Amino acid sequence: MLPYKKLIVPALAVGTIFVMWFAPEFTVPRHTRLELTDGETRRSLLSVLLRDGETSTLMWHNSLFDLDVTEDFVAIAGALVQTSVTFADPRGLPPMQIKPEEVEDFYHTGGPFTTTGLQRRFTRIVYRIGEIGTPRLVVGKRVLDFKHEVGFGGQVVLSTAQPNVYYFLRGVFTNFVL
Image (cartoon, rainbow, N blue to C red; front, side, top):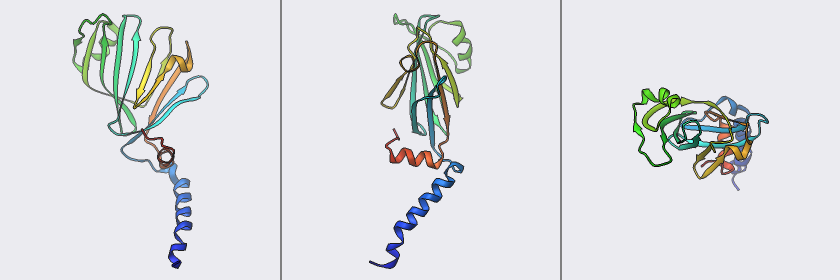
């Protein structure tokens, strides 16, 4: 065996240790770390690494207005960006198309509506779980039922960030990436 080939394994080991030591300092571009935790116990409910452009969908029932809600998000540079929302009448009545800038008013006034073209950026959201609503988040092939995970009155905390190198490598080597 040639002498330089004997150095490959030790060099890789030293390189790996170096990367792991300094990994918290360096973030990975074009990826988003999505974490969902129990707001009370801090228990991890879901931890995934998303490539920029990957989508997730939050579905829940608005008991105040008796409407089924679907919120679509896309991962971009360490955040979730809400791109569309629909408050649909369970009886099948078509929702009214609204402008993206009107969405704040319609969230609070009720009535079926839909909008696309939103660019609402989120890095942290706290969801409080009620008896009615059945909120669930779909990320890739995974579905997280909030009420099942934390129960009535619990909280689910969604947080995002750009992953550091350590988190990225951990995801790659543990089949963490969706």
